[in-house]
Image (cartoon, rainbow, N blue to C red; front, side, top):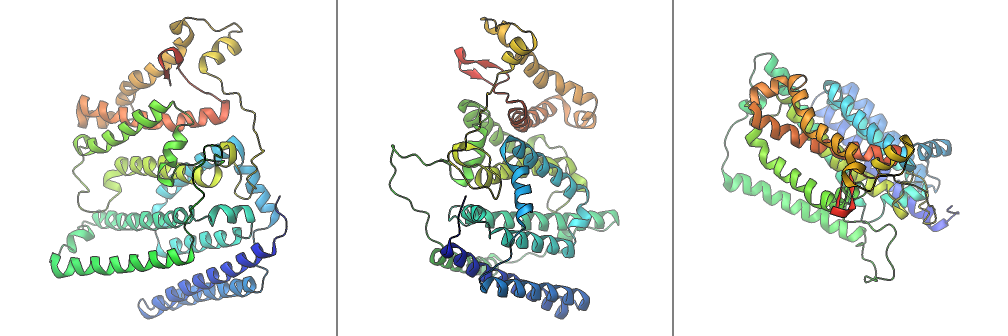
Length: 431
């Protein structure tokens, strides 16, 4: 456990003082804009009060005793999100959150609601930084961009959904999408080039101040005798590194990424829906929208967050406020499906022959990839099969089933320690 460190406490207090003042200025600016531009006096007063609340938090922090989350709440979150059980809760919980946000999107895209969620998220982040384990993860120079990207991703997802909801309401009323009404063409020079120049200067200024205030995450020269624990890939490869936990390298590093690339290339050729081209919409493209959000947010962004903030030494899962103890060892006995079947269920030794040993996994994989598509074509995806035809439907459903193999395998590993559904090391085929 971390003891009292005056230097750390002082650094956190100073940072949180500036942090809360920035949030106060942000809400004061929003209040001014609501009052002057939109003439919404009541909303302006509410967010001005929020700004004053952040000023109080800033004053308390600069006084040397910043407020933090209660100890009991921290321990509860550590208990929930530690170990394999925490990984299951985090993954399934994030999926449930996406479903809720999608189902009630008309409520959550309201600017007032979205701004409230943003403030609560930023407040939670500030209150959590008083925990040293949390601070050491979030404030690490390598992880600062990931925290910023998470908020930027949330903003742009909200913006696209907000425009889509607006267009869906307009289409129901018989009105054209907003993009149709705002279709005025502008010249590349000087309009577009001028805008790009302003963005380039702004981004250069941000990077300049970033380099001044945040030290470059440079470490000592590589040493084969001193491997970092945990040894993590760059953030944009953390999804692939997480996939390597559940599949052989040839599957996680070659087959699945190839299917991702081919799937993205195949989308224009297998998509039969001509609506939604050139404007934001969800109602007219629910399936495409939901599949993209699941594939990108759930199977990529969530894996990056999982690998960055919850994966610690020895590649164990740690709670958000739990110190990363390199001596923490979890005894896991990962078992193949054939061993579960022959030893645990049948009570006998595993046969030596490959087909006799792995017949159950082979049957399950064949049923999943070849029997499930026609069943879905006759039930859930009947309309897709009729409109797309056999070839396009089979390409689409195979890409979808391969995408779903990752979360299925993840949950099976975390819950019953399933290593491989098919284990044929003689042929280097472990699935």
